[in-house]
Amino acid sequence: MITLRLNHQQRAFLQAVVDRSCRLSDIGEVVRAALRDAPDPAPLTFLAVSPPPSRTAVAEHLVQPGTGKAVEVAAGRVLRIVQLEGHQCVDLNVFTLADRRERLHVGRTRGLQGLHPGPGDVLWSNAPWERPIMAITGGGGTTDTQFPFCSRLIYSAFFGLHDRTNCQEIQNEAQREYGLHRWDIHESLNLFMHTAPGPGGEPVIRRNTARPGDYLEFVALTDVLAIPNVCGDDLTNCSNFDMRPVRVVIEEPLPSDTAQARLAADRATILGLPAPLEVADGQPLRRDPTYVAAFPHLPLRRADVRVDLDDTLTRRFHRTKNVTLYADDDAAALRDLTLSWAIDHLGAFTGNA
Image 1 (cartoon, helix red, strand yellow):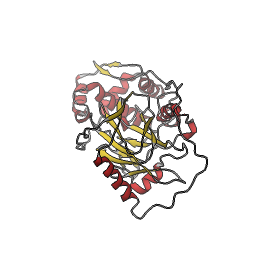
Image 2 (cartoon, rainbow, N blue to C red):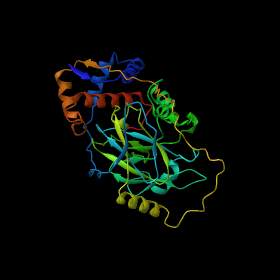
Image 3 (cartoon, one colour):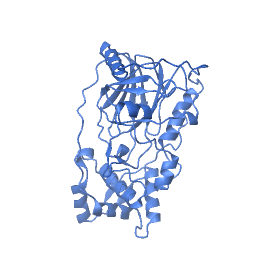
Image 4 (tube, helix red, strand yellow):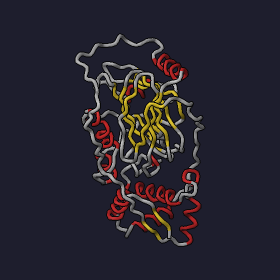
């Protein structure tokens, strides 16, 4: 016997795969089919990350799976987002505190900084402001600007699922603390998300290579409301088929942080910015003191499945499990193999690679 470790919404997905199949009788059959077809794990490369410097902390938040947190970051301060267990993608939305209408523009950032902004790059705001609002100054996490946040639509269209954790609804709830509405959401900057060109040049999501202690750091170039949320996707490579907590820290800058942020902004605007446009009737953001968090689709409940394997499939599992990612966590490795196969078998979502 072997344990397939799942939460209740992952188990519901696998049961839906069984219900759509004429040859799978139960989830155990999904596991056995996945192992019979399992490929050898692809090699992975991990980035070397130096620890962050010691600074004076202003605030710290533990952001749990299925949730997000809106945090004010004053101009010049450092925002650090830290992996606790590794593997976790984080969606980041950013608004300026002075005017809720000015926000991160992922398309402009992609166009000016590339598909995968990193240290030395800046995050751009939307028109008519179009200016750098944060600088990426440290860490070694990967980023992505190509894939939109997951949503109820995505899970309905590609997985036939409804009413489950997703980045759109997590973001909507987190930003509600500052009076932002569901229609105020913008495309997220995907942090710790590992994407690459697929066989035909299309972007695909590879397995998440973030490790415990990995981080990304940003310096605010104006007063901003940053809203990181733990990606609600537990079915794809995005966060290696699970959701895990992350830490969000705000710190006072060191002189080196200020210098790096200034250099990033100068590099991004080497020939100068157009004269700023005055936008009348600014709409500043303020925290609602009566706010009580009400994130949907929680709590996540354990829903493990015990599966019978014969000796042949047991040996195959130990040959094909991804030890590089999961070490001795056989339950996580089995979940990876099983959900990967189930998604391929369903055939609608082709973003994994």
